[in-house]
Amino acid sequence: IAMRLLTNRTLVMSMVIAAITSIPFQASIVYLPLFLQTVHEASVSGSGLQLAPLMVMMSVGSIWAGRRVSATGLYRTMLLAGLVMFLLVTVWVSTLATGTSTLIVVLMMLSLGLAFGIVSPIVNVTAQNAMPVADLGAASSALMTFRSLGATLGIAGVGSNLLTRLRSGVAALPGSDGLDIGALASGPDTIAALDEPLKSGVIDAMSHSIATAMSVGTPLLLIALVAWYFL
Picture 1 (spheres, one colour):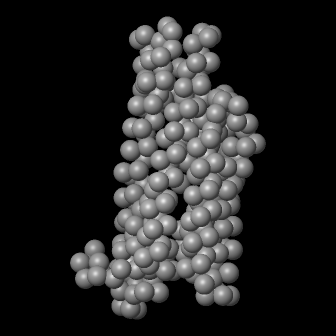
Picture 2: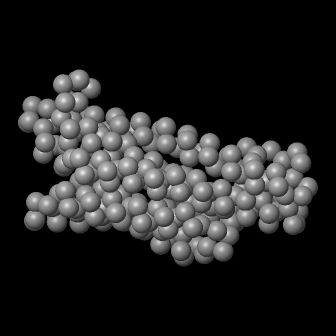
Picture 3: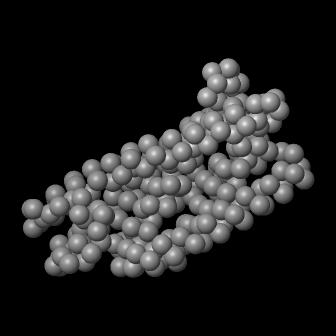
């Protein structure tokens, strides 16, 4: 990234938003299927297939937002609407529990896909509108770099948070001595093989851990809203 690009405040704030919004989105792709596999005993392929609504709505959100911005030119307003929606949906996802139905999880995915579909391309438009034509390629590359960086570091942080919460939750369960937390987090089959009531306790701890990990997106998106203000 050419250092001279960092003198453009709009580009810098756009990179911050791109990095931050990629974290809860990527976390939802990784951990919502894990929730379905663990709590609702969905198969690996079945839980992956249930991500389809998220991907479809992301395309729908991108197309709709693009058409609206083309018609009105109000890309800052559209970005704000997308960020607020993303924040509200992230708060909703953080309420996941063992009683959350598959239908509700799918609705969460639809909402997440729509919100991210609105935000992601409009961030690009915002940054590109602030740059001279000669720097459009460099600005787009910078956004992609920060988006990928945010996703990579964010998933690691969210995963670490989840394991920490799961470890403390499982440790409080009677008969949990000797359980491999890593195996519980990465292999729902390990949880399914447990005997009751330990199995139900671990499932409850897992759902709580996933919800807590997903709630990390809430303060991050508040930061993204602050960054929007300084665009």
